[in-house]
Image (cartoon, rainbow, N blue to C red; front, side):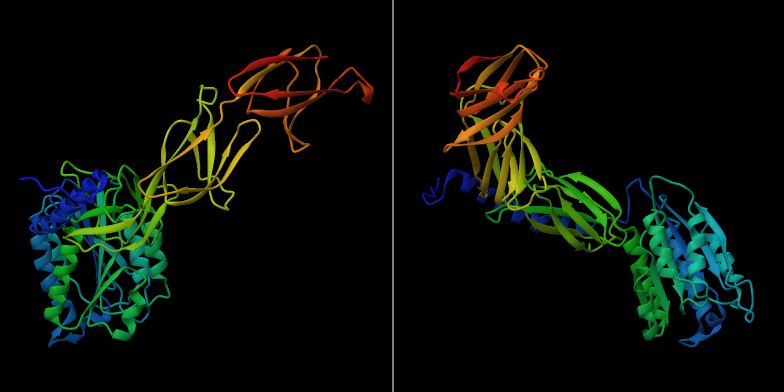
Length: 472
């Protein structure tokens, strides 16, 4: 049995069916992806633990020393991570070499470098640590740049575990930002061990901060951070057309780190074999600015992903098509015209004649480098429609010149003439492609030293016709 929908056009019916299919896939896909395992692709993740071993870490928290709590739970974590072949770990410690006073702001050291299978070395090193010094967080972050050897296919993650703030007048925020700009580390994780809530805000500029209020909460926070660092995350970008359907596609997209401005990914938006936007795999540790390279571009600010889940983002990019054709003939087949947003003199696009191109719906100004110049204002681009503009077929006139001279071309309209072109008279035969209309040539040979030697010629151009004119 078939059902007819007389109120719906064929093109709208197609969009409706695509929309329904998309809704179904949006309902199913997240449940399919929920069961994804931890980062099982070939990308290597390197996790540097920076552990606070300053004097304050010997203090008690939940009836146990903070350093002992950190040893126990961090030891369990590195044991768990050792099961992943594509994960490497390292341990940097600060505040464990020099007692205070005096304050040693260079008291930071890479105790266990990156390697596979080094969980035992990390745990053994932690057992030998004794809190005694100060808290040089900025210097430790700066030194961590040398802990990560160059690696083009690696994700570099820093997890800072501390119970206090910077004590050496350094600027951890500036250091972390510089490391991110250089692509050395991703946004750091900061785990506060019973950190004073008043001091917690000082870490917001660094990255993701998790303040544990109890020892049990510290273990939970550590698990959350590791999950966020390793879980594979997917994203679907729905480009919404002027009718509310996610049907727009085949558009380049750029993803920038919101914090550093650094370009992270480039994709071309694609519909997969099911006819819905394809799934992207991107790093969930960053907040993104997405630039959709439509004409003009459309941006999404501060996109935050939920790690380990299938995320979707909808972007309104209603588009229509602009096409300019010559009425007859092919004199303008290679002509490129300029498209600008209405009232804006900045060139948005150079488009070729006879080739349609999509633009965000709205109003545009068009400039065609014909002779004379053609300017079309307030051209409306409507969603899902083609805006067709036809340019009159030009005519051709060949100027025959015996001697080089000063030769200017004018167009005549309503009894007034307006300059449009300087004719190069270095050749004796000069073809000009002109739109239909009335024209004037004003010429004087270079050897003629009197104004009265000026020659004026008036002529008419008709569409599709060719003629010649001799200038003496």
